[in-house]
Length: 145
Image (cartoon, rainbow, N blue to C red):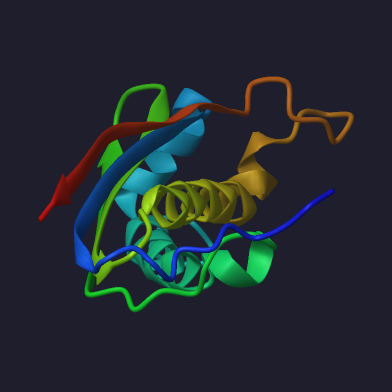
């Protein structure tokens, strides 16, 4: 049996979730991102847009995720020496939590990074031996009455 949970008896309260994840990349790719030399454009800006859209569409991708009215999505991108990390905070006054929206936002933003830099990550056989999405998780969940 599979079903969506009934949240109709719950009251609307402020809900906040903060999620984070990273993608490991080759040093040469990181340098290219920092110099703004990625052919497809500004990796950080595009990934932030993808994160915002991803949060708003979580219910379209996950069949038991309730469509909710998101009040705010705050993505941030950190370019480190061997990885790009994405952190997203999602806020809503709703009957159900926003963890799935935050996780979806992070995951899709990381996939976007991969898509934008895949040309530089491939080895001579067209494989991705160094590229890896890691540590996607909820860092914090808040419910305020």
